[in-house]
Image (cartoon, rainbow, N blue to C red; front, side):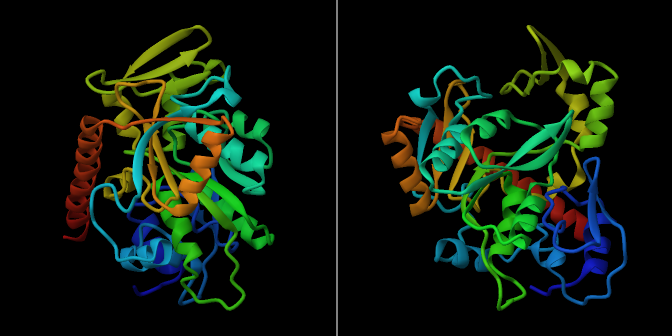
Length: 347
């Protein structure tokens, strides 16, 4: 893959409205900043090759290189990517009484990893009002405060860049496909720097079909509901076609057709529904609201899951053949839609 600089990333990604605000270009130089949920280039840069370009998931991804670096095997274009096993999971008795978006598996795994010393900190996504922001936490209590889906795009990868610059290591990261693709490219040391140190030792991916433009979402919601009263949000499985906003003891259902108009264009070219560049990927389990779908991709991911189960942080169950067929179809359809859109962008 040919690596460019900030000029090329502006022309190919920002100027063409393909940015997904993952943050992979932020925190490694002063030329890119995030403001109110948008990435902007604030200065020109004359570097011919830059980490901003090399890490961006929208400038072209060398899947074969990432697969060899991450899984030590050739890339497979199968809908669910490389994995060892798929199970149903939910938070165990150690987190009993806590309220989660679905099964609470992500919070359970991160909490266990922090409490057991498997990681020294975790890069998660918090929120300032309706604007998602990355946050590094060092204990399970703070991890619980970041639970629940944010739905708007977040620059989580920027916090990983900042952590690497500060010399931090042994971090866990929870992110969506675009965020973890950027981080996977960073971990591959694309500019072959001799002093490179990988700050990440655990990645947990979140299933994602789309996110929302944070500023447009804030304006949209503010015209209907007081943002200060919002306690949670959810998108029920089809055929509901509504976006549910929870405020205290009540809920408001908004047409999903309206909410979809707030999806950034960059989401349409993303082929990855299940966050393939992760140790463990987690999503909702349609039909079993209190459970998650758990895709275990690496030996490190399997070791963490087994230890979390033994310590009472996680519970597992079998994943049905029907559920696997449904998941595979959904992920495969996203790849097909993304490829079609990519071809349209090029033509």
